[in-house]
Image (cartoon, rainbow, N blue to C red; front, side, top):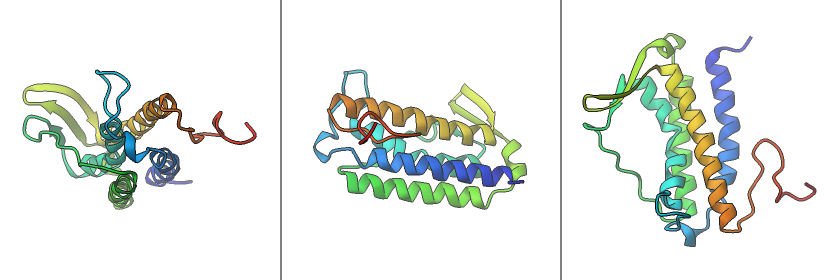
Amino acid sequence: MPTLIQLLLTELDQEAETTRKMLSKVPNDKYDWQPHEKSMSVRRLATHIAELPSWISMALTTDGLDFANNPYTPEVINNTEELLNYFEKCLADGRSHLQNAREDQFWENWTLSNGDQIYSKSSKYEVIRMSFSQIIHHRAQLGVFLRLLNIPIPGSYGPSADDDGF
């Protein structure tokens, strides 16, 4: 029977394959595009997707994230080659920390806050699962962005309407 860590590593690898396909479709000339003034730009959204595997490392090595003491400063990505390289770096970091984790760490508390305002208190396992969910969620957003730009969308859990033979 596989361990929880093995199951999470398998899921991470499966989602990484799909994420890599989606990120590779981002055109270099559309990084500043956004579909609506309240939407993220393609750059911000794609960069966030690429960095999310590093939340696994953060969950396993800290007791939380306080935005008041750690303001968010995203990596500056200017083209798809940089984006894919950044994703691979974050993925390797998250994967390494997960491989070397102890399952008893998963049940330790982790808090997301902004100063005195507590956004969530979760187990480290729940934060890892949330990071997987965030990858999937934001990857779907990116798919909508790409569709609006008339860029063919790769399949995620099977073929997409743009795949041959679908």
